[in-house]
Image 1 (cartoon, rainbow, N blue to C red):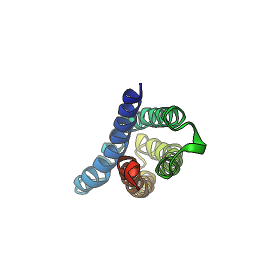
Image 2: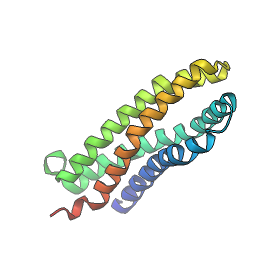
Image 3: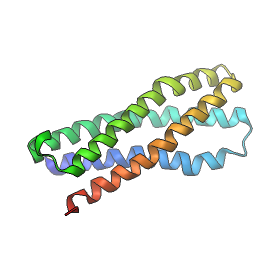
Image 4: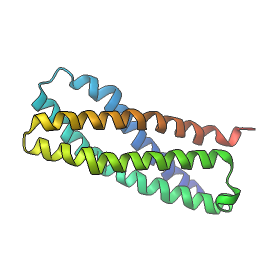
Length: 152
């Protein structure tokens, strides 16, 4: 059971953090040459496909993480430092995603659907700023998760 939970946990992190990396480091620069209507419509389609995967990843990350915390470490009181650090960063990342999804994303989606490019542009920029914070946090939590058990 532990191997299954850990596998789901790791795959969920790869999907979420990898998706942010692909969006920020690859898709964002590649769309820069497009005209605003095409660029904003592309981002709208991308996020509409990506965000359901983030929701699945969030559920699996927290469910598998807390299940392993209880079964492998005996609960919160016995968790090593790296588990608590990973948990803290993951909660911050989740809060940032919830803000992104329920604020800028919904406004962006409505604006693009209405072809209101002047409203959509600033909302896409806000999404970019949130991803710019969440991506390094995700990379940090991945390093913590992968190396923490070896910290002295």
